[in-house]
Amino acid sequence: MQIASISSVLYPLAVLVCPVGMGAMMWMMRKGPQRGHTDDRDSSDYGPTSVDLLREEYRRLGQEIERLEGRAATEYRPHR
Image 1 (cartoon, rainbow, N blue to C red):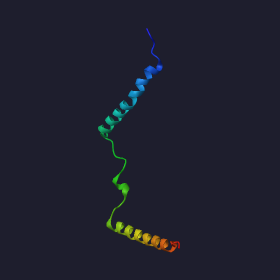
Image 2 (image 1 turned 30 degrees about the horizontal axis):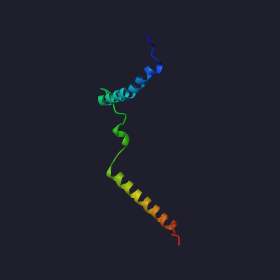
Image 3 (image 1 turned 135 degrees about the vertical axis):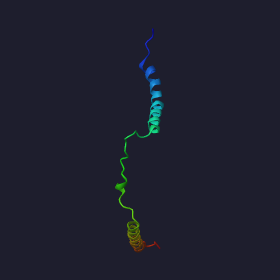
Image 4 (image 1 turned 90 degrees about the vertical axis):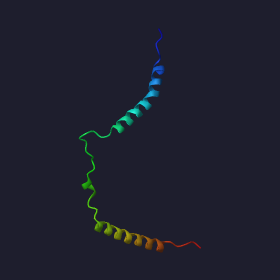
């Protein structure tokens, strides 16, 4: 009776770990969320999305762009 070396036993096991682990992860992901599990994100976390808020943000961003473009125009001096 011959005793198998540790490397001859662990090598096939190491080769199978990756595909078996990947299969288990795919199975768990396909299974989806359990009953009673709620999503951590609540729609109230995003705040109000009214048209007035969006218009104000658009106005503010437009002013910021104009300010940055004006500063870039004064800082840029082509080399001659």
